Length: 270
Ligand SMILES: C[S@@+](CC[C@H](N)C(=O)[O-])C[C@H]1O[C@@H](n2cnc3c(N)ncnc32)[C@H](O)[C@@H]1O
Image (cartoon, rainbow, N blue to C red):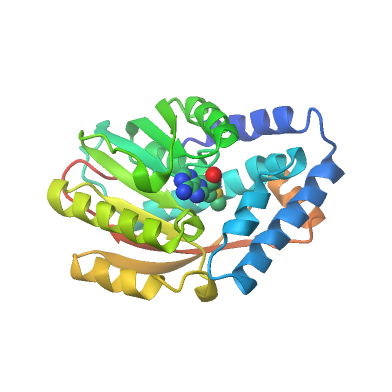
């Protein structure tokens, strides 16, 4: 469980539960979660990228609820742990960062909220091509007391604000067609080099899913950044634990990997 903003986190989960279990039963959501997870895993096994599976992820009320209730908080917990461990504090001890967190492919906003809260960034800019997730993300950011703007756009074509930022792409790069992914990675790298904005990329560990990873890990290393694989033992909140069990999953350990460029200046966390 996150050890920062626990109250906000708990209130967020409670609000998600109230909204998403208002019109659906627990068995309906857990069945949808099973289907959703299966689609992701099958996508990893069978495709060079995961676009078909992920498109299906948001295709029905049950799957949308499962995505918001389960994967959103899971991504929050994972990114919260990663950012804490990267130990990137450059703010003054009690300062609020002047940077805006740019949440590329924000989904329901969990990953972005986690970094923004840890790094004491007061503002978030969430970008996604899906209008349903954008509405969810706006609620998520608000729950954590963040000032937020959301916009519908393809991530590879978005105009990034020129003001100081921290750039996050969590669990989205695998969903992009190769040319868009390459273009976006170049944009992020250039931005980090020229402005010192920190960049964090998060993806699952499965190698078959990200044939592009090793090349980009080298590029990040040359630019002074790092890549890492993470495994965290976690105690999930009760609702997530129950969903996890009911869907036949096992998330007592959260795993993922990151590419990180720390940038310079007022970027950090903890
Ligand atoms: C697996 S979700 C991850 C969401 C969020 N970053 C998180 O970690 O919880 C991927 C998100 O990327 C969005 N997405 C996929 N391709 C996109 C694109 N080309 N442009 C904008 N958003 C995209 C999807 O709509 C979805 O919300």
